[in-house]
Amino acid sequence: MTSASAEHQIPPQVQLVRTYFMSLQDQICSALEALDGTAQFSREELPGEQGALARPRVLADGSHIEKAAVQFTHSIGASLPPAATKRNPHLAGHGFQATAISLIVHPRNPMVPTTHMNLRYFHVDTPEPFWYFGGGFDLTPYYGFNEDCVHWHEVAQAAAGPQYPAFKQACDDYFYIPHRQEQRGIGGLFFDDWREGGFDSSLTLTKAVGDAFLPAYQPIFERRAVLDYTQSQREFQLYRRGRYVEFNLVHDRGTQYGLQSGRRVESVLASLPPLVAWHYCPEFEPGSPEDNLLTEYLAPKDWVACG
Image (cartoon, rainbow, N blue to C red; front, side):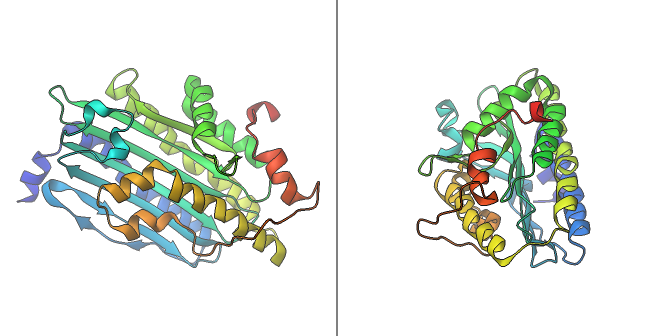
């Protein structure tokens, strides 16, 4: 199939979103490389049938970033995986195109929080084509700093506008680890099955979230990456990373979707940290920064009001 004929198979809405996600991937990779100062992302182009494309990018063993993955995918299939139809059973059995960007940053310094973002668009071949957007971003600190949490949520609020309260609540609800009865982090934004206002309005909102990621995260990274830390604090970071792994492997719909859709396993699991630790029943000094992470930071809070 020629490139021209492959492009012809892609609906114009999908092409529009795909172009934006690829541009955002380039922008974020360049910014993260600059923040790290030494490491570069690996870059692959994995074309599929009918114009599908995967562009996995992974940065490893940097000066300030231990691992980061910024993945772009455009997949085309005859039937949506169960993870995508659980909430929309009427879409089961229909052909689809999906395009997405997802990222994770695992910093080396435990004073710098881990962060995640995902944006996605589904276009389903029902008799009247059905589409929806989803995504968001969240922050997972190991050591709490009020100004970082306030800044993160102020940028999120500016990006989501009047949707911020609902998107924040959805993020708090989604990034929760039931078997630990803990929040994964301090939240941010999360939305799914989004169609309000039509395609153009929904794309504008999705772009606002995507364009807000670097202004939300970069200042936090720059403030904290220069701080000193101890080996004990590093060990606490590795211990808390275990919560991130547990959520991703047990509860995350994106991981389930990637595995069910037959994507390359290395790409699906690229979000996992390179080093992690589990300790049996650790105890932390009451009032210590480690203890305060759970009691003061990982409980849902109106961070904008704290500013």
